[in-house]
Length: 264
Length: 195
Image (tube, rainbow over all chains, first blue to last red; front, side, top):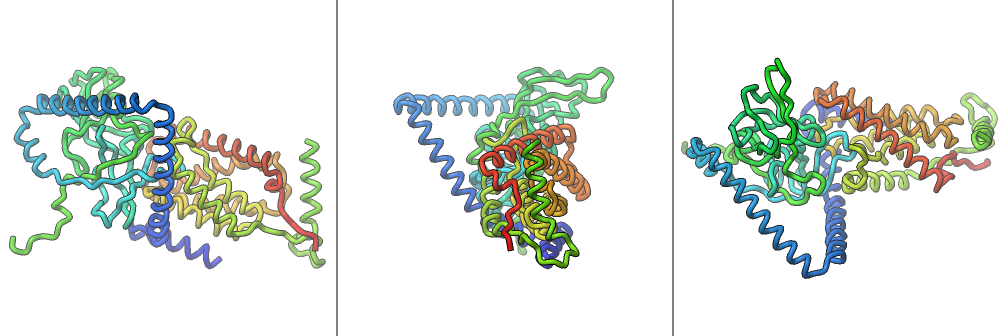
């Protein structure tokens, strides 16, 4: 009875204060080691299976082509973004100047029940990760940090129903809100005069978690109801959420966490 | 049906002497599962659910081993042990999920209480009720989770999607319960020893 009451009170107290409970910190810190070990075993098993399945020569060739393809895609995306955002070149330059170095992290765990789309990273507050920091990988936007423990942090994926990211259709600079649908992303609140097309690339707008221009996905279906104030579009995310591994945690305002300079 | 009758008769015989208020010494003494074993099972379940999630997913839903373990432990021990174990398991899930507040803590505790209330009835001792019971308990827990999320102001904004996932999760849990009870039939009956 005492144990049950204590657990309930600890949890309710953490809910009231908004800080992680002792239980959450302890479980998060211990679990990250178990999850890291499991992730390492999984990675090793996956690597072993791949090397057995593919002849070494073919695997090397494949890897080289993948790298080249990825480089070309990134270059293509960068050039498209530069072309589309030419009038805002000065603003983009400032943005790039403010873009601080990211924190590399590895995905070691998923939401235990699957009703929300979250993942756990193996880096936490001790590494400098803060709530609302953005998380990206080499394909685009992954999500944002919603909880941090000393040794781990939780990312709300951009496909979660509770996720909302300011977004822009790259071709026409039309604004919208990218909302998760649990499996993909829906671009909502796009003005009716926007001429959306299937295949349009959707990128982030400037927000509290991301700088502008990071890829969210590609439009695959357009919902243009007659008489409605806004149109919407279904977006296929550019990130493969089923095989997330290494990510980068970025903060659009890295200076915000620094103490104020008394000389200023 | 025949098996169910046998199970019911066996459970009645098992617990008749343990009814509350009985003055005679019980003929059978309950032998609850070892806590360390259940705790170990909980740790394994949490690691499986958080590390192998993409491989456990069917139509957006995932097997909840934690629900099954808490329900089974509560059925074998009673409400007090059930609610305590439910609170512990739920706290761990909230800690690992990160964005659910205390929703899993109290939803899982509810499972512990509800199943604990059935601990000394024939419902706890036959596969005929345990398998659909697993589905029902999963649904109840998920509904409690959604209510608690809403109460905390963390409402999940996709009720249809989540209800679909909840239904699939209950089906998957029932399936896992059926498979486990086929492989380990002794888990489907309360352990006891004759005094």
